[in-house]
Image (cartoon, rainbow, N blue to C red; front, side, top):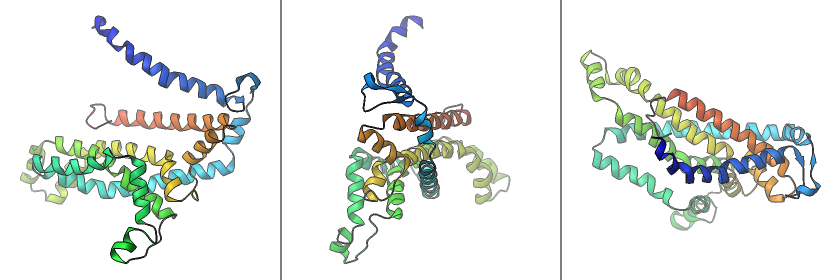
Length: 272
């Protein structure tokens, strides 16, 4: 197998340039007092740590985690029954339904979010078509709704992947032993599908917690989450140090979550 290692060289170079090198720059910026990327006038400092652990940012971080948790729970409540029903259908029918969930993901996410935002405007689609005037745009509800709409497929697919691979003989054996359908689901199907749920939680919670596009558009800039703050730090061009440090903490959080997911799913039964 050693002779094939040369084939991984382009991938290794790609990873170094686009992953390792940017991470090293962020680590360096986290310990520098710098304006933009002018390293000639940069000075070593720990002030970025003090700024990152400011109470205001901590409250924003907790708010981000809360909204991500709410989004994840809603996605589980909606996504698990959908994945379960699809797994029981004929392959050709389940393929069509899964394709319907995939098709919106082929369009630009900004376009989908803007379209959803237009639906929630008081003079938007609902008013023009049905004569119903609603004004949910700019609210917390609209942000969570958009997150659920965007990230729901990432909960459905891992759960479906696990449910579809379950041995039907286990279900038959449970029913032959006198267990009801509900008890069979509770004792057999649900425990065996928890790997898919865990994978879905990772795939939904992490992007929901770090998102800045959705809260920026759906709340019209009123709702500030941790992703929004990081985006503003880099956008201003004068707070790269604090923004880099916040990003590194989120990256560490993501790696820990992925590590836990891999421990729960050593066989690789899900999509992660």
